[in-house]
Image 1: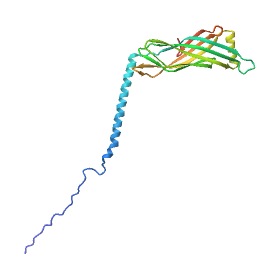
Image 2 (image 1 turned 180 degrees about the vertical axis):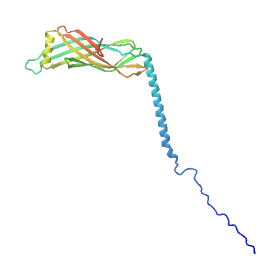
Image 3 (image 1 turned 90 degrees about the vertical axis):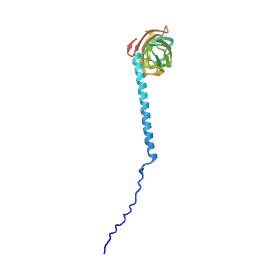
Image 4 (image 1 turned 120 degrees about the horizontal axis):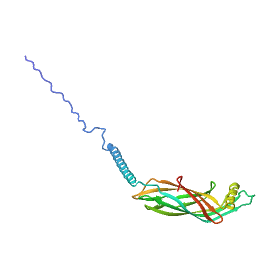
Length: 228
């Protein structure tokens, strides 16, 4: 009797279908990354443009070689000066009333215009502030000299006994009262309607006024510590 061997049929193996796209992937997950990348590119582009404009502006300034403008107190017009001694029993020894007009000149030696900002000047006597005057901002063309005016009014400012006695002595015995004018103004070079960083221009003037003649008898000004 012959025995036959039967080969078992092949075992069925199920096919697993793997997704072509990972399960963790989502079309919306890349949106924040894209936005972040676009913002970074835009920021870099704006920074590069700003640096380029700044470099061009600096090159133009170096080519023009801007110089510091000259700002000086040219003239003082005395309109009124009254010194009234108070009674010796009063706490205040002296009162002073003063009205003067300060005439400044601004000289621009540059090839471009200069923009001056709002300025304030203080009138002082022996370190005591009496009053102040202001100048509105103005634009000055290249290679020009501009005259501007500021009025200072002192309305019956009282001095204590020591300063008051000095003021009366200066006015009655010597016929000269020395005041000091202090102030600062900011000047900016303007190129293509763009202002450069501000440059501080200081004014420090000593003026002497005669109470009898109501006129200026002496003036000496300093420009940033230098005589002009």
